[in-house]
Image (cartoon, rainbow, N blue to C red; front, side, top):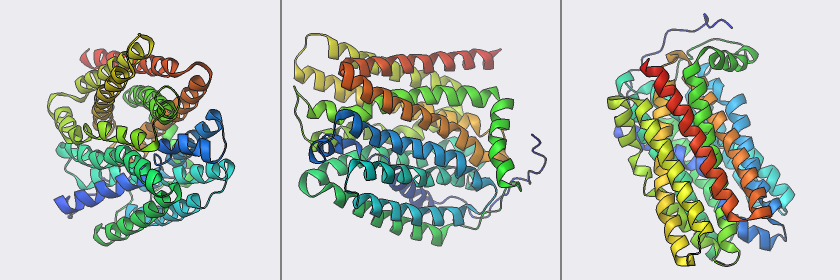
Length: 407
């Protein structure tokens, strides 16, 4: 498919300031947090709504599927339309979806609302190419790292806030508060962003099919998407079952403890700009090798702790340490993949980002489904083994890409 309709890449007079970078990172974090408020609540929802482990497992799975579909159908619009306007519209719709989620009265309606929330939470992925477009090309790795810090803090700290508020107030209050925060952030961001010039002029159908064209003609993009998608399987298998595992015997811990695991993961979130700097300086391919291998080792240690005859305290200690490590590894790999793919076609930042993140959330949906089903049938060791295998495969893909780039 021809891409000759691409316009010259726009150069904006307004550059990223610390204030604008913070606002972009905060909004991205609040948007993506909408996907993860449910995870520490699964044990509570299982009890309150009289549902089984499989049924509550559908909630995070459908949320991730909604996000993947939104990445495919909505995010590419950023290359054809004013990103400022898109961010505003999607932000307002996400706010309404969160309010509707808070009103859900059964697992069925909660699943539907979660799917719609996932669809609109792709607002976060409109912000990353927005920041990249406003950044100098040789600073994009660092810039994306800063935005991802906010995004990843949203992912991880959302679990802490969700678990705490559910313990002391109501799970419905979480979604009401989230809706208010999204509304405030989007309105402030609208007031400071410039108007964006579309980088291409394509009919919607052609725009969507151009995603396949990008994948077909770029092996770099294919390998990045496959590797990060496999890490998404590992990531979601863990987080989609952790709360239920901690809620069940022998631990029998509440949603607050499950949410506190988000703090363990958040300890590594501040490293995202550092990983972006490394990607700019020493090469993103090398950073992906380190990141993916760290994830694989972390989950294998979890697997060993789950099958060896050790105390519950030892298992929990290993969980905390390896949660920090695997979140750092996933962040390092994702920041580096962003740096890699943005070099494929500077006029297609939104579509390149869409391809990468669609693969991630297909992987996360798969991981959430396989993790919840595996846990229900065979227990926690199967979840950690699944995550270990997925991470090893991601490392193999990056190793092949590294060898190809060195030829």
